Structures are given as C-alpha cells and as structure tokens.
Picture 1 (tube, helix red, strand yellow):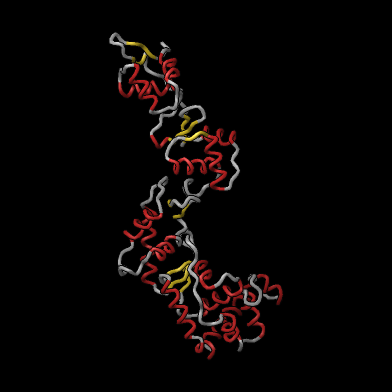
Picture 2: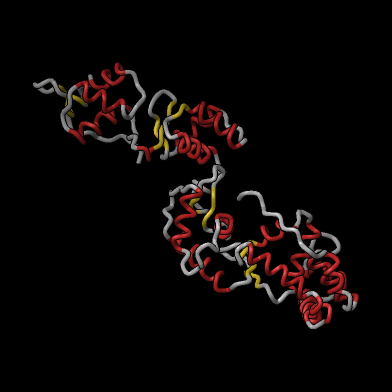
Length: 355
C-alpha cells in the first residue's frame, strides 16, 4: 500500500493513559501496563504475569477485565470522552473500518505510543475490535453497517476471482467497488478502498503490485519459478533464461543463477522452450514439445500444408532457423509429401509429451 497517512493527535496518549490508570490499585495497574505494553513496548503474556505473582493465567485475566471495568466507571473515563470522540472522528475519516496495524502507524512510528493509542481503543466504548480470523485481518470499526457491507463485498470479490488471475490495482479496485453496495457515493475514495482491500487475507498482491488470490503461486511467490513467471508475464514476450535470471536478481533482489533458472523453467509446465535457451509462457499459446511434435500438432490441426506454410506456422511457435524445421520435416517416419507437393503426417502420431 502507499505511504501511511500521518495524523496528528490533539492529545498526549501517554499522559491520557496515566490519568485513566491513576485510581487503580498497584497490582491492577501493573497488570494493565504489562499486558498492553504501557511502560515498556514489549507486551507480557497472561502466563508471564501469573508467574510473577504466583497465580494462574485465568486469575490474571480476571484482574485485567476487572481493572478495565473500573476505568470505564471512573471520573477519569468521563473526562476522556473528548479524546475518544477525536479518535472516532479519525477512524471515520479513514473509512470507519481500518486495519489495526495501519491505524496505529497513522498516529505514530513509536511502538510505545502505538501501545497507548491501542489501549484507548480497547477502553473506549466508541470502538469495536473485529479480531483476525481466516478471512480478515485484525481491524477496528466505528460503523457496524459499513463494516458488514465491506466484509460482504470482499467475500463476493474473493469468490469471483479465478485461481491464476492477475489484476492491476485499477482493475481490482473497480471489481471491488462494483460489489460494494449501499454506501453513499463519494464516501469511498481511492485510499479508503485500498485499505478495505488490504483487510482481506484471501486476496493479496505480489511483489510487482498485481492482485489475485492470496494462495495462488502468482501472488504468494515462493521460488525461482514463480519469480520467473512474474518477470515474463510483465515482459509480455519470450525471454532467454539468462535474461530471466538477471531480471529476477535486479527486480526482486533475489540472486538467481543462470543454470538454476534454466533447470527450473524446464520443469514447470507454465513455460515452453521456444528456441535455444528462449522460453515463452504456455498461456501465450505456445505448444509444448520438440520441433517434430509441433509440426505434427500443426498438421493434425490444419491438414496438409506446403513447406512454406509449415515454416511460417512453426516460426510462430518457435525461435528457430528454417533449416531446423526442414530437417525435421524430412523425417519420413513422421511426415510424407503428397502428389501436389504438400506435407502431411506419415502415420497417426504417437505423442511423446510428458503428461
């Protein structure tokens, strides 16, 4: 996503937290400070705090919940209403439904300050935390209706994406907005829509900025083959394996050796060797197989052809010298010349291609 939008708060989160905690007993205060990282940025687990006091983790949880309830009933909480209102307005401006990580980055790059802002989110009754699950990331909402519509639109988008589909940022936004019904026109700008998209754990973007299903090998890039596919897809035309390796190294900062790249491309059905060291993508229409098999497939598909017609058809499939095609065509075991000077199959071809 683009650079995080920076928001200046009109209150000091640390000072506000101290006011909210001031009337608690020492142990209650310590539990909250430890759990939410309010003194040191690193948060402690229930287990760790329990060991310090020689009590169970469940007892620590009870102390935490009781302390939070006491704060919400205190005079300090009522005095902080304007702070909670300011934070609610901030979340509204960000779209009313915001990924937690993004929201905290908006207010500060400092971990401790972020923890204090997060504490206000937990304490305030203006905010609803929608916890991370298999579909969505951890997020905060101040409008349940908008949250429901965004979730529904993201679900529809996910279900209508094909496994291997890659979309530009503009294309994925248009598809998402087409499914986002019932939200007032003008409320959703580009940045808000992008934040909504990034809530999904089922939809993601690859290192080149193309969007698709998060579990697709075109998005969740794991090795040389996947990097090579993205490079060639972006290039739009066949490339020599050395070019592919060099492009992987320069684009993704992943060292790709020439020989390793060549070996990986050979093993993957997404790629077709179309010349000496030159590969194209299968999805571009290139036929797999050696030159003889390509000629066989062309003749089987189109029937008898002249020598020149065969040469032209093969050269659309392979980067070869014409003589290489003629040498293969002269093999009488597979091809024969008809009385009118055309070529056809000598017999029904037995495919030697890997299945």
